Length: 269
Image (cartoon, rainbow, N blue to C red; front, top):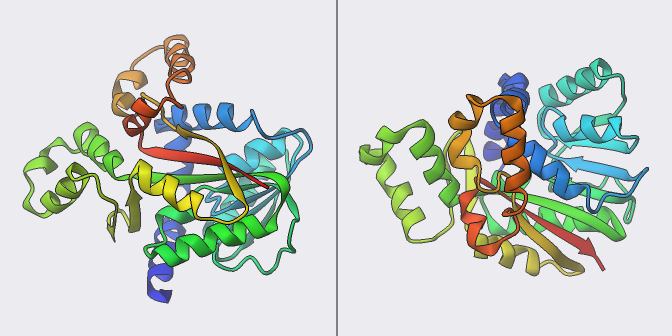
């Protein structure tokens, strides 16, 4: 387990700007849709814990909206980068390094909102995904909301077709495409150690956590994930019109596999 964590941490330590730019420049529709959906549930002046918050996109966004935000990430470089970005945007976040499996630094029932938007797709064993969710639930206040993100196994197919279409005939990639075709989840070494899931398996995992009730499930890119390059060539007005249109599909069950990232919104009962 320690080796896996070290490899994941080292992966993100190398270049925090890469993940910042992923949402800022290359996948802005993911953040646009995610924020619009989360804003349904996040009340003004909330206390927010961003577990695995990476370089701080969502932490900085919500700090600028007046929320009290704590970022908690495995990567020390992400923590430093997030603090720097908060200063650049004229706001402040509390940011510290730590492991999603151990939130003992935080008391029970201490946050109005908890984000778990990274750890679940780097924890290879089911027992550790459960533990991360239980820890996130423990520090969440009753009536508070938990936002949990996953990478879908079919999201890898979308990525392959959009970015690396030649991988469909690459022998070493064949097992992963086969797993996706069978509708199964898989833990493996991808961009780093990763767990890619299916919609049913993600729902089943959240349903197993005592004290949580699922409010909604949505695709963080909605129907837009396959069309990154098309959208990049469109004027801003056209892009944002598509973002708004995609919001109408993001919770529809039949379109959930059109996305790369899946989010489940839960409330603590």
